[in-house]
Image (cartoon, rainbow, N blue to C red):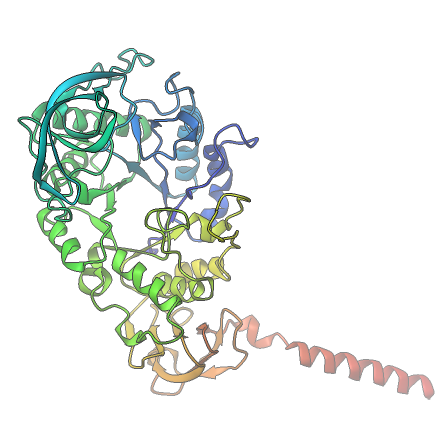
Length: 518
């Protein structure tokens, strides 16, 4: 069975629809064959719903989940990424190239309401949502009637009864966090700020049965429309674990499919991720945010990070079955609230680790695959980036070589690695990396490979490593680098080196000249 490999098919600063000749959806459809050829078999598409700001909206401040770029709402018909027709065509192209499609689900923090309501509410402390500071009547943007859609696909409209709170009182023109009378924050959410149910915009009330049923109705409509293969769930730390447990189960029963699902729970605290998985009864995976932060710390530690402890207190180390690994994403980009962009020199190492190890399902970031080119976007000294060096080679190695038993060599503060034995003599690998000086390490690849010659697939080292009769070899790596050693292909054994070719050319020409003197 092929290894699963996910690709996040967007970054935060993509041009909006109409700026370039092709929509982002059209570009995805066009690029699908190459992505599949490079070893991608799961694509996470950005939120496809109409949001506040129309084509300016990245997708996370949702106005209407039934508008996929079809209705004239919020100053545009298309979304930032294109029209509904383009979206469905992109999904079809991904499927035609053997890739599963994961749709980004944004249930909470609705924005851009059509009308206001007068509501009795309590203003709560920003850093302690359980502490009431003041009670008042507020004017809140809570009525969503979707006049541009006119009831197509769903005649459900939203009002204060479907929400728990807002962050703005229109009567006083004042920002804050306001809890509606008769409402309570959600259960089994993150405990930051006392209770982190409320994030921004208008907060959905998951205690309300009509609201829960509408969210399920939407899910079924969305599946019937798109025929996706799974989901990426946004900001689950602010949503009841029980709700998403039940919603995913209902969706799987309705579709009759696995619907692989990963949630974004942004916390560096492993125990919080484990608690959420517990309360969902393991219904879906989570992104391994603690591992991302390890990569970030290593990349700026000047070799002082102890690499032998890389997986301590990470989801990959504690529960790899529920871990989706990543190096960076749209939230960690410079300029974002969660900015923690891994330093360039370490990215190739980090990707080699997550792509070639057995644990977790890796997710490749669009900006690392294609590079980021947006002049004038950043005001903090950050510049454009190139694609991560050798990323496509690493993707292909995951597809062809990263199989079989894994042996770990996280036994040194700087120089660490692992091997994959492979399931046949032609595959398997040995990875060695360092955040310090270069060096070598004896590692076992298995007796299946006894006598084989191994070469560095990344080309950083030119040695030939011959595996001994017990299945061991001494592998090498340069300082601050990674090398991935794989069995030498038969044609590589026969192919002369550049030096050999040069010697052959010199000898051939010398003999020709000698012959001319005779």
